[in-house]
Length: 150
Image (tube, rainbow, N blue to C red; front, side, top):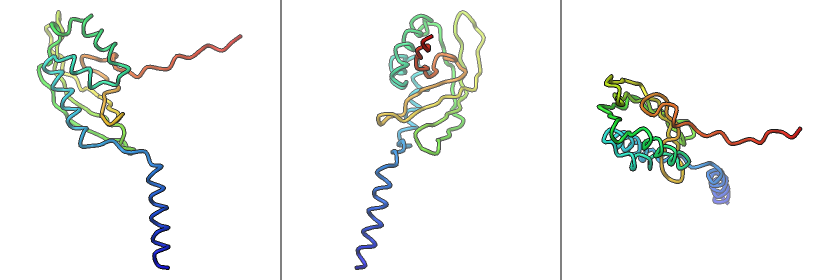
């Protein structure tokens, strides 16, 4: 009879775990964040777009071509300053310092960049970024709404 209470506890705990969404693999976060920044530093934009959420990739690649970033954007340095992971373990906010310039300007920018990564389909992907060379480009798209009928 002592086994029955232990079995009940195991079943209850096992059932609770089955309904808890899986957390992002934090061991995969560091290589994703570093990979994004390294590819940015070395102008490897094709590889860089693989770190983005899929719905942002085509627009991002188009912007790189239109702005001639392979020629005109230079990232001279970056430093990852802070990483905060949400309580649910599926979202991370990264603060980094990025030094960059885009021709024709010869003035180096020194920005604190906030990047939001999400854990999706087994990988950490960049969803949103504020400041830096891609400021205003990487923002979650709002779903199209149909105006109400008159």
